[in-house]
Image 1 (tube, rainbow, N blue to C red):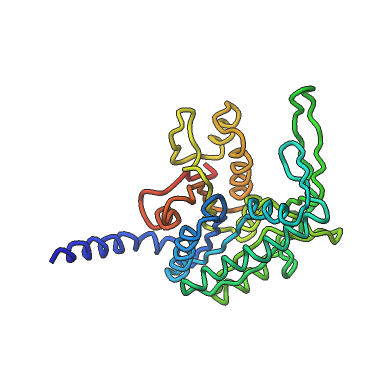
Image 2 (image 1 turned 90 degrees about the horizontal axis):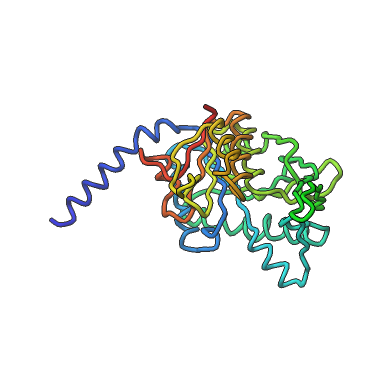
Amino acid sequence: MTELPNVHVRAEILAQALPHMQRYDQEIVLIKYGGHAMGDPEAAQTFAQDVVLLEQSGLKPLVVHGGGPQIGKMLDRLGIQSEFRGGLRVTDAATVEVVEMVLAGSINKQLVGWISGQGGRAIGLCGKDGNMVRARRAMKTYRDPESNVEQVLDLGLVGEPDHVERGVLDAVLKAELIPVLAPVAYGADGQTYNVNADTFAGAIAGALRAKRLLLLTDVPGVLDKDKKLIPELTVEDCRRLIADGTITGGMIPKIETCMYALDRGVEAVVILDGKVNHAVLLELFTNYGAGTLIRRG
């Protein structure tokens, strides 16, 4: 008899999820998966389970993954020295080979395996497959703290998305497969480019006009100056919080990615903590959410 109430509670939770499932039925949801959760096998299995549940519930999930720590470890193992400029890794010809091997190889296929292990049908791709993503060389700037002069950084084979051809992804989604995408792209110059995973995810989500873009990170979401979670923001709010110094550091490029995706037709973007168990399900299938929701306004 002690188990019976628990069964009813679970049934009630499922019933409460119904309107959320109906809202996202046949809608595209893109999840950028990264951070420390990627290095935790148990968390990875939970994430894979969530992705399969989304697909089984009638959504069309896509996954874009990063892999910075894994790339760093492989470079160390191979004895390839990394140069950093303005805090960013320069990607030369030797480094980009390792980047492609790790991102489009081991990490990508590991994620495909985890999803398949949970009963899903995943397919691993990168931006080069089917000419999906064309990139251009990224030129970053930073302000030298000593001279206070803004300098242009040549990061080598680091790219930014220039064009997304959605035909391959449309075909994969029509076949009811789950695309798992590595942020490696080709350029008009024939070069292979390493693309920031957040930026890559924003470009894909924008091209597909996704219902939601979820950026899984290592923090609860966007925090105010008292370090409390801000549950919802508009693009105007984001610009104001960047200007007044509330949003700083690594959160700024994430917010820029959010605004880029929203500008290209994504309905809403969520920054949430990937370390929270079933964070994706909490965000999509409950009234509580699990991070900071950002809309156009």
